[in-house]
Structures are given as structure tokens and as C-alpha cells.
Length: 311
Image 1 (tube, rainbow, N blue to C red):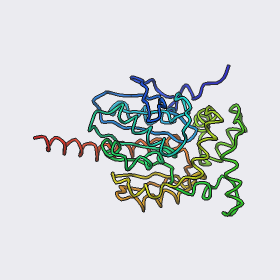
Image 2 (cartoon, rainbow, N blue to C red; image 1 turned 30 degrees about the vertical axis):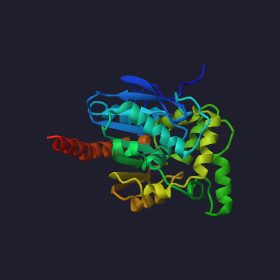
Image 3 (tube, rainbow, N blue to C red; image 1 turned 90 degrees about the horizontal axis):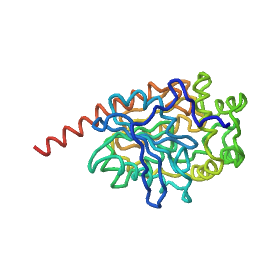
Image 4 (cartoon, one colour; image 1 turned 180 degrees about the horizontal axis):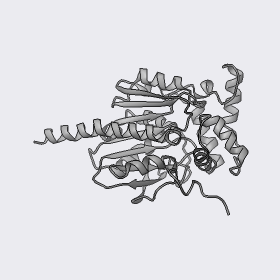
């Protein structure tokens, strides 16, 4: 019997959703969506990264659902969302606006957060009218807008063509990851997490990442290898906070610093010392706190402004 695609106990075990639904994207792709918390609470929408699933946000969902309406969805091909033919940043943007439309009322606004490829999803959707209708603020965690392979430090050595070529081959490998073994945990921790990450956090990440189908992992690796969303960063005009780990090998902290400098309305850059790429699991309190601060500042302001306009 295969092991579940996520841990089943502890703070990183995903809680049961209040309700589940399917959002249909522009090309017909069907997306698994979960809604946690009360329907009338301030909404937060969570987009996970490459090889992950809604389970990746378990700690944030658990902490926020008492006071927020938390929407999390599986990117196409990940988790419980079936694989689709299209793999592109356009598809990522289509999927996000489909989820926003399926879970928010017309004109209703939310804080939208993305980790890694989820952050890239937000950048890709920034200019969409559906995004501007529904996004009050954004949080970008451990992400970048371009040059991902060239700047990754998963492969040791000096930056240059050789390291870029080897890194691309490693990240884009078609080899199955296989079962979660002690060696697999060690490799995953080195590549994606800070050196001080606790075993329960490594186990939670390993279960999720190893559950991603090989073909899906490879298809999205090609999209990330050619990523260029620099122009889209300038279109992300909502108040946006940025979080990155100083020990991140996949999207080194320089990406976070460049995003913070390029965003039209950056409301803060948080650098987490010794934390790697998996910030929502490695530093759950910091990510949850950032989401809470964004909803308190920007959703409350939005609701107040809308009430004043109607009186």
C-alpha cells in the first residue's frame, strides 16, 4: 500500500475543508479547490508551487481558518487536479482567475498569496481584469520572475554555462523520485530547505513533493526554465509583500530583493535567516503573520472604502 501524499498528523497535516469544489479554467482544465473557515470571513487565496499541493499550506490554513475564509487550490496536474495539455504561465494565470471567479462574489476582494510557482502565477495574472477585480493585496513567497535556472544554487560550483546546464538537467529530469527514503529526505532537504529544518518539516515536504507525478514535474520544469515575467512584475500594482529565505538554493534571496525593488507597491521584504525554499513549512509563523497583516491592513481598508462609496 502506498503512503499518503501528505503527512496525516501534526501541524503539517492538512485539515478537512469546509467545502470542496471544482473550478474550470479557460481551456477546460478542472481544478480542485478547497474552502476553509466561515463564508463571511475575510478571504485569503493560496497558490502553491511546483511539485506541491494544497497540503503545502496546512499550517497557514490551520492558523487562519478560525478568522478568515481560506481558499486553496491544486495547480493543474498537482494534488487532486488532473493533468492538462497546456503548461504555460498563461495557463497558470487562467487557472488563478478561474479559482477567484469560482470562490469570490463579483467585486469581492481577497489577499492572494503564492509560493514559488504560485508566486509566478500571481505575476502572470497581474494584468488580468479578473485579478484586479478580486485582489486587494498579494504575498510572494520564495519566488522569482526570471533566470531561475541560471541563478539556482542546487548544483555546487561557480555560476556560468556549465552550472546552468547541469542545473537544468537536474531540475528537469524525467527520473521518478521514488519512495520517501532517508536518502531522499537528505537530498530534498539539501536542495530545498535550510540546514536547520526539523525532521517533521522535511518529512512533510518530502511526502508532498514525491507525490507529484513525474510527467507533471518535468512539464512544469520546462516552463520554469524559460520563465520571463519581469515585465509582469511592473503590472502587479496591488500592495505586495515579499518573503524569502537566505538559505534558499532554488530561488536565492537575490530574487526576493529584486522583486521588492521592482514592484510598484511593495509593502515589505522579509528575509528569513537560515530558511530555505519551503517557507510556508519551514517558517509557518512568519508566513501566517504576513498574511494576517495584509488582510488587516488592506482588506479592512477595502471594505471601509466600499461602504463609504455606497452611502
